Length: 99
Image (tube, rainbow, N blue to C red):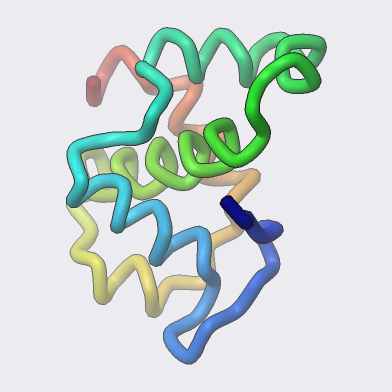
């Protein structure tokens, strides 16, 4: 399984938005919410984890947060000038409010 970085582009914009939405539609990533958050909060666990699963979890978490908390449509997410790291930080801080 290949993965890409947060700056990878497609014809529609940043791929993290597209891949995060795909994970959202598919009912979530391979990692559970608790597993993913634990890994994101402990950098030593990232090295021990299957990196693509962690990346796709991040994309899913960011897009799910934007949809549930910010009430954004997929088109609004694609059109918005959003930075993955900023959205992730906000999502992690507010996880209990939207999950």
